[in-house]
Length: 122
Length: 111
Picture 1 (tube, rainbow over the protein chains, first blue to last red):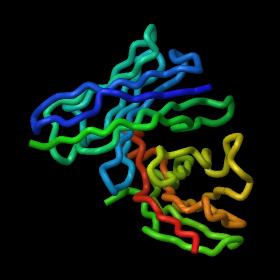
Picture 2 (tube, rainbow over the protein chains, first blue to last red):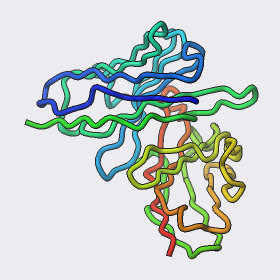
Picture 3 (cartoon, chains in turn brown, orange):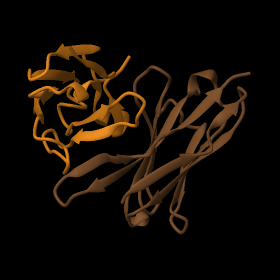
Picture 4 (cartoon, each protein chain N blue to C red):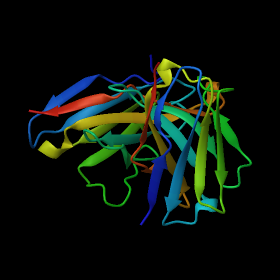
């Protein structure tokens, strides 16, 4: 069974840093690309960042470029989101999500974790 | 302001057919495939439709997707009370170097 479990969220002061982790199980992690997506309270979804299976390709949304960095450790089945210079508007539930290719179609975000809440406040 | 435009709300009665639209432009919906996600209250989103009209295994046939030009639609037939949720469309945007964009979401109420 595919499982994605995020951790590392919490309360952080403006300007602070936080590293989120997403632990994957139930599939061959190194062969799947991964993403981080967030959702501010009561608002919609915002895609943040993508990393390919071997880490050779990384994309990030302009809203977090230079502040957030995605990375992965295939030996540990973990994907990370390092966040710096956090602002109040970064307050959100952060999800990791898997992509896959079914042989004919690219399937974005076919599995999601349960999310971890990041609150940025003084 | 989302790149993809969805109606903020939609409603229907049990058994009815409801459609939710997702309007974009030539750099996103017009060029790339669209996926749809269902988010039940208090839970993580779940993939409903990918590649415009493909259903993952386990998603009921009541859910269907289509795309024409720069607009896509999600249709739910035989509406059930448990379909009450937020629905989001998503695709890639070539003007943003292929970054993923989401619609603002549509809250579906089953009356």
